Structures are given as structure tokens and as C-alpha cells.
Length: 289
Image (cartoon, rainbow, N blue to C red):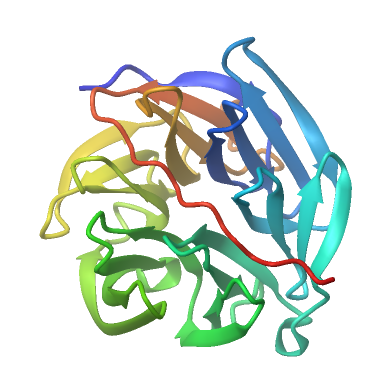
């Protein structure tokens, strides 16, 4: 079904994360969260670059106009376009000591955005509506991570890495409400922690396994159906890209402190697949003024 993982770029990311295909630009974007760096890769020219350096970016979405919406530390949200940043949310008072971690736009342009405390206290999941209204929708989350919406827009997948579980919720696309949480998949210590996630065109969820050396495709019952093995252990996130959405891009971490012989820790990989992904939704957050 798949090719072998191909190393695309190695910036030795401490925590490479949030790979996202920019369909307007035909480029792949990703972030190195603690280092406050962001990168992009152009497969047409096989070139890549760091384009941002500054405060940590825990996740980002692509706006309907092609600009990026960056979710940072202290609950700050900014719009980034051609090096110019516009404040959307200055900060969230309750999250001043924490940072965003993994975000996703929904079909109506809202953004679900998780908060994480690197010191281990439990935080929550917010929903940012297009008018910039911010709602706390989940609390007591160990490490907010990979999310996805089903094709019928009736279910929402959500990962709590420190609980070793992926949940599924009922989802109301009209209001953005999530309800009826139940466990979709459980992972043991031997598999690694579930991290970033994405959905393919057959409705199957893929999950990156932190300390698991792999991304896995899950069946409808949450069992592992397929595994793609990576040469480095801290596999952090996964997305589909390319003109036909059959190029799987995978981020990894640990480049700041690689294990002995682990020269690819923190690198970006690509795997060619027979199954396509699905396009991610654009965020539609309004800007002040």
C-alpha cells in the first residue's frame, strides 16, 4: 500500500508538529514548537526553508485567504502573512503560563485549539468561533492532541496523549458543540502514545505514535489495521498533501537530544500512499478592526 519513508528535511526539531498542506501554495508547512521556528517545503522544487522565528507556535491553521493563523504561548493568536503579524487574541488570562498544542479548523471555519502545560497539570480544549468568541469545551485533559472530523460531519475525533486514548464525540456542525464522549481507541505503553492525527478518504483515522516509531491506521473499532514504521521514535503528527493528497507527511521530535545513532530525530518524512487523504478545512476567524 505504501512506499518507504523518505527523509524530506531535517532541521533537528525539538518538537516538529502540525504538518499542514497549503493547497493554494502547493507547499507543506510545519512548526518546531519549543524552538519557535516554522518551516515550509515545496515539492515542485524539492526545496525547504525556515520562514518564521519567534515565540512558540503550538499549532496553526490556514485561513480562507491563504494567510496563517498561529496559536502561540500565553493563549496568543496572530495572523501571519508574508512576515506581517496581526494580533487576533492578545492572550487568554487563564492560560498565561501555558501554550497551545495542536489545533484544527472545522467545516464552518471555527478552530478547536488545545492547551498544554509542559509541567504536567491538566488543561483544556477551546473552540474559537469566527467572531473571535472563545469557549472552553473540555477540561482536565492531560495533553491535548490529534483531532479530525468525519466526512458526514457528525463525529469528532480527539486525542489525549497522556491518557493513552483517542475519543470520539458527537459533533453538531451548526453550533460547533461536541457531546457524548466515548473511547475510540486505547494504546498500551508498548505501542507509544497517540499524538497527531488525520483522516483518509476512506474514513479511517491515522495516528502518530510518540515513542512508537510509527504512524498507524485504525479500523472502525479502533484496532490497528496498518503500521508505517519510522527510523526515529518520537513520531509527532501526520497529514496528507500533494496534488492528489496521496503524499503522507510525518513530523518527528527529539532533534535537540537524539538517541545514540538516531540522526533523523526531528526530521520531516514523506510516504507515498495508495489511499488519498482529505483536504483540511480553512479557518475563517475575523480580524479586529
